[in-house]
Length: 445
Image (cartoon, rainbow, N blue to C red):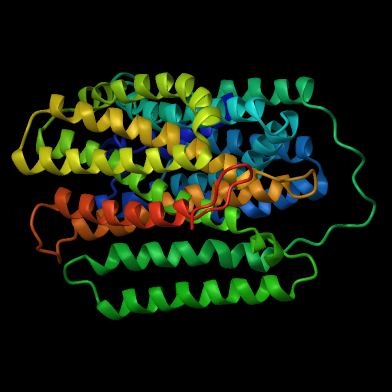
């Protein structure tokens, strides 16, 4: 399960450093290239809850195998893509494969380990592997692009995905026979959930472009709001809702997922800020920029060892607040380094703080988000949590980086603007998380 998680996480960030090479090879400008990143993230995040529902209805091993197969086939297509539209289509299919496979994988882990230290340790490993995959994606992108070419950033995962498929068939317990009646799925809800963040991201990115028609952005933003309202109405009336609205009656889950979105937005923003500063501001090449990110991966491995022990001692809420504070500190360091035009070495404290923010924050939030789940709703809880993670990351990049680096915005250093916006979001997350009720822990007044 963790191997699958690793390569899916790698594919979130592995394209970033390779984007200039992809554009030069396929003849695409930088503005269009952003959809190679955003399309994958939003499609995966928007369909994750549908994937979680599929796992609950059809069986987790079936959906795990189906989603992993789809993801592997799309990776192969992306590596062999002859044109840019084919590459974008392959990335969209990759997101769909992730959406089907990941909730089944996470639900399998949750149900294998009972609540308490064993589940905390398992979720810590899961979160650490995901975090390492996100960070190593940058390093792998630089190394592979420099020595093998950008196509191999997709092709290299194919043999490992085959290993995951074989292992899933051998090691994961077989599902019970599927029910004879065909389960009705909430496809309108899934489409609306995907359209909402896609339109929101489009509006945020286009609003900052010089010369862009403001009415286009406003129309996209209005469409995002209508999609959100439509999603709630569809879910309230559907006989088989994608996510039963009663699921959100649990205040701890709601607050944990909202905080996850805000934390993920800041973490995803930090990755791009690191990349932009190293390559655009300091002029470091793809290989050097990728290798410069390695201390962050090492720190994440250390956090994966430390966090499980402290989660049991401190409690989930304290770990979440620690992670939010560390991420805010990282943003402050990035802003100071950028304003003073310091060298790459001065980013090391920010990398260590980002590792702490991921290790403590995401693990604690995952624990809260899946607490109290049963075999019937574990897939939904996992899907909602993963959707919050991915959609929050995409929305955060669109708002923080989009506004900070927008040609139409002239409010000082773009790194400073993006960092200040991210810190504001983290402060809101701290208020929400501080009031989240957690079983076995004292509640904040």
